[in-house]
Length: 346
Image (cartoon, rainbow, N blue to C red; front, side, top):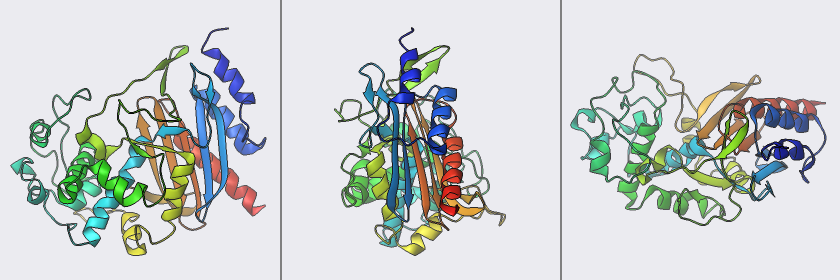
């Protein structure tokens, strides 16, 4: 038997928290199709974690099983945290949605002076892709902004998903708080919500219960050891566990840290310059899933994929964390949501 083949067989039997039902079948099929070593799956109803299911392995070398305390990289699900702290600064009148980026960060390219905070939050800034950006080095703000040219579009004209726009938003938060983004988010969100296993990625940090990330190449898994500059924190970088993320979901069913007005604003499609809705709110994708209002977000980075769907009508949230690159996280989250809703209605 090849070394990589053992997890795909053993994951079917290894999961002390799994029930044998349709959701269990959906997860196992997803793992087999997409070569997923391990999955943590949570289902919450009105802020209460009612299902926590763990499958497979957090580490294929040590054969460590996934548990509710296993820490996964959640990639772009992190954008909600950056956006939330920005919205708290707006609520405190330290920032405005129409504040010009260059008013806060004068070191940004002069040609970006039409970019406002609302454009960074909604992926409508028009900020172009940088030239020569490297994940293997650190940057000062000046060095980071020197990699960019003229805007690709007029701010507010086009929705175009933009990691570098959110990275820039993280630098705005850092400037106004006098802290790094990661420290600001920890102070305003992680610590108050008791998310003690949640933090931003640091290659040198020893992280208890950390899942290892994998790519599938031809017929076997390979390790992924990703690097990440601090200036890129706004776009992603958070590691969390199933239980910690459930605390965040529960908080979003209350007025702390974000009140109802702010949450509705974040979960409403941004209006483009021509009056049409864009494809994004502020840190979330709003829409309908299964015929009900929902917000959702995907997360994709080297070695990890994730997805969260938050039902706004029935209060059901499904979140999926996987330690492999590739497709399938959204499809699994949507299928689990459909199955759980059907079971509730029966």
